[in-house]
Image (cartoon, rainbow, N blue to C red; front, side, top):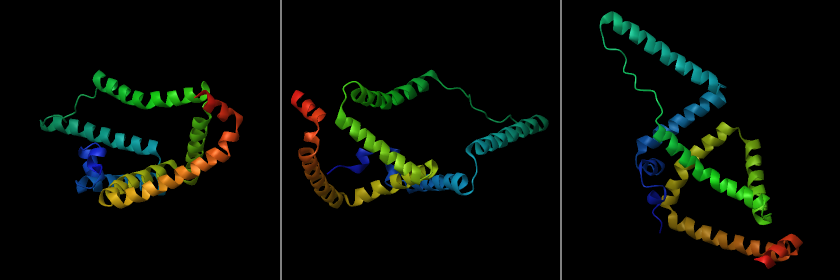
Length: 198
């Protein structure tokens, strides 16, 4: 039996997703709901929101600094606003982990003419396109946040039952795939040549 907390990384993110730190889950849920309401329901624009927040911050800091000089108080504590080279390298390494496999898949499709991989990617992109036509991007992100806060918790509680049902569904899916492979895919000349070469 897999420990869900360890599978999610075992840190504070796992605690929030499994509601072990319930206040963190509440903060994420309220923040996501507020952002979704502001941008989707109220029709607020992201650029306007960012500009207004920055304007409010600049006005507060300006008047705080003026009042501090008039009243002989300390200036507002502003941290060094500088991005270190180390954080840029870490971000680039994290992005590289995602980009290299995607480029490898593209190379397999384009150069090696891998038809099965092409079909998998095409079907996945068609599903994404269909979901994108049903929902706005922000609504899709909000649904993703809701799922990320609920699915790990439900799986943690009912792991044995879910694993049993998923293994049964996987067996049925593999059986249907074998039928399709035997009856349809082996009759396509390109695929049968690739299987002989392997």
